Length: 279
Image (spheres, helix red, strand yellow):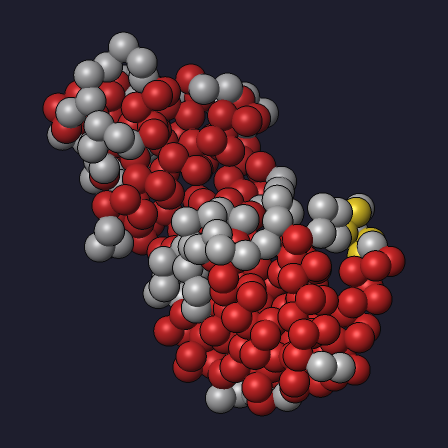
């Protein structure tokens, strides 16, 4: 396959309006993929160049990420050292387009097929990158025999990824004691917000007030999304502390989240505190 044909196939995959429908690759896209795979390493550089161009909007169509994910899978099937490095390059490429996060996650997952334990240190470094797909990176690290990260970012990502709200609540309760030691207050606030959203899904907003208040004490910035749960409050640290006093995060409250079908937020300060959020 000549270079022009390679370039055209890659471009057509990324520009395709419906490259994948209900999990099935379209026939024409599959034909392009098969042709590219037959060419082997010769297609690796054109693929990585075109996919990373999607990250800055200079390549691809309206559903570019679906085609890009299939190209990442193709790189895994090619299985060469160049293909492995191409997947690492894609994983390390950040983008303002949230859809590119799906591409990075696929790249991370496909790296597990190389069975290369030397990838583990690089993958651990990738966990610290902006918008890193921590769940897929951790899965690949574990598949390669490494120790998955338990960083705040990894904990948040895993908790958000749990589909069952009660299971997610148990997960957040397990990790809650360490949150106050996290260095980034945004991670602290995010933990309590996502925790609160799971309680809210089961028992309503009021039942989640102690968690939303805890998140605001950790991160009282006016742009903290938890302020939307208290529309009558003026964002400030003092307002957050007042909310935390009114809706304290106690051990009893946390225990009720998994033992009661309808937990209620305590409205008086009292009981043993689950953290140090109160004023």
